[in-house]
Amino acid sequence: MAAMAGLMMSGQAALALDQVRTTYLEKCGGCHGIEGLSGQTYIPTLRDRIGTLSCTPEGRAYLLTVPGVSMSLIRDDALMAQVMNFVLFDLGGHSTPAGTRPFTAEEVHTQRGHPLSTTDLPAVRAQVWARATACAAGHR
Ligand code: HEC
Image 1 (cartoon, rainbow, N blue to C red):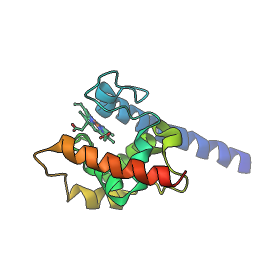
Image 2 (tube, helix red, strand yellow):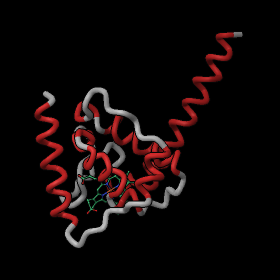
Image 3 (cartoon, rainbow, N blue to C red):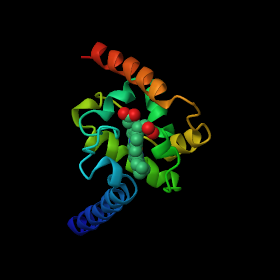
């Protein structure tokens, strides 16, 4: 009976993961690539890189407020949190600092109220990246 329950649990988990991956593929993968490798210089590589941003609070906020995320058609906070956790922990790989907290639906909800507003996104992005990179270097 316990084994049966375990099987059913893992079945549900697999289904949830499938939904998250499918959502990433449909809503993000066209630009960022199935494996997080966009192949385009103007679209950032997520694989083994993106986790660095979560080293600073501003980088963590940027992850949720960058236009591709904040303006996404994924309107469900819980699903968006799961997609971003897939991005951070699966695609991010070793770039994600040990002990990084997963995103929650509440955090997604809060950040939706503060979309990134700037006329010079490349400059903001460069600064956020520079501080996160310094932060991550300090943790090695
Ligand atoms: C139309 C193409 C496009 C789509 C769709 C898209 N993005 Fe992006 N994404 C970009 C571009 C371009 C940037 C660089 C910042 C900018 O110019 O907006 C970016 C930046 C990012 C960043 C920050 C990376 C960095 O180095 O600045 C993350 C994280 C991200 N996207 C995740 C996602 C996720 C998750 C989705 C799906 C919900 C998504 N993106 C959908 C094009 C896209």
